[in-house]
Amino acid sequence: MNNRLEGLQPESVFKHFEAISRIPRESGNEKQISDYLVQFGENLGLEVIQEESGNVIIKKPGTKGYEQSPTVILQGHMDMVCVKKEDYPFDFSKDPIPLVVEGDFVKTEGTTLGADNGIAVAMMMAILESKELEHPPIECLFTVAEETGMDGVLNLQPEHLTGKILINIDSEEEGIMLASCAGGVRNVVSIPIEWTEVDSEKQAYTLTIKGLRGGHSGIEIDKNRASAIKLLGRVLRGIEKSIELDIAAVSGGEKMNAIPKMASATILLDEAYIKELEKIVDQYQNFFQKEFEASDPNIQVQLNQVEQVKQVFQDKTKKHLIHALRLIPAGVQTMSANIKGLVESSNNIGTLETKEEEIILSSAVRSSVKSLKDEINDRIASICDLIGAKMELFSDYPAWEYEPNSRIRDIMNEVYKELNHNEMKVDAIHAGLECGFLQEKLGKIDMVSIGPNIYHAHTPEESLSISSTQRVYEFLTEVLKNIK
Image: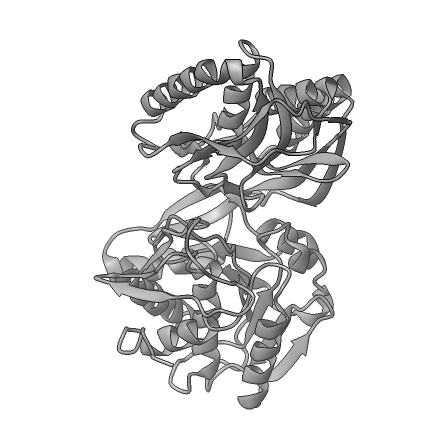
């Protein structure tokens, strides 16, 4: 197999990044990558722990002169969000990620890259393998299922770790040191379906919203990008106000924590209303193109005739669905009053599915303030009460609260100033990191999060800066050298 990243610097990092890009690691399907890391650590003669959850811990002693230095935990997650372009033939369960190098960037041909958080895995592997780097005792923690609710860190066995300093490598902006992050929860709404037989004389169409940019539902929720699922609700409501409409199925999005790029509905109506339907669809196409001309310039609202279906939602189910799509909050809900430009709370309806007996909407609710996270969930619960739906919460993870005093932040800032002649920015992030759970699991621990420049994570446009990766890796290894 061709080594598409051969020659990129740091060579030791990109060698491992390319190797793990050939291994399936979608959230929930991490066994192969977990076993690969175990074998990697054992081949180096290091202590390896593989937890029942699939988490892997590899321990490396301190180098000469660092034996008594404080142990440092390096941490990242091995799973990735698996999203591809609609027409790109690809199977994440077996196909290697189609890596491409363009200028300063590693990209792909049509899938997510997995730099979130594969680049952390590759950096840790390079450090574990190195015989030249100077460093204190290291415990590398590779977690599973971060992207789907942080189940890996939730099931972490804390007795396997001894370090009191932790460097998370799951940030996506060089020069920024994160010291706080939002908490979150997966909110699942189930709307019961009552079916009825189809009027055989009605025409069936697929209404599709497509061409959106999508994006990371935490980091890019403030970019005013359109949600295809929310737009579908608007169009269905607009049609329903003018035309007698039946709905047979709805779907949308790919991952709970990605802004949905596409959504569709199978609808039926009398032939006499077809011209009116086309007029309404064109009207909403114009609305959306004007509203999102900067953030989503390629929005399309399409209508295609399809084969007749056998059953549709009863009128009550149809109305409950449209009410849910219109009323469940989405996007930024509050901004922080303390940190300028920081999103404080948000919701993202990531997926929409039609099952045999229910319609499922899965959302990622986030907030750096627990009471506001609870408030969003309570609003959704109120909507469910009105439409006879059920709401369940899964994978609730805590916020990572800011600590005023941090020796590792001080060391990082000193090293950064020495290398770059300016200070790192200390910031908070709206996206959820595993740091909140790690703080709960490991107790009082000195913790920061860093990472190289990654753009458009959770989308097929994801890209990783090569030069930024080199600088961040050199910075990280220099920080380790300075921990004595």
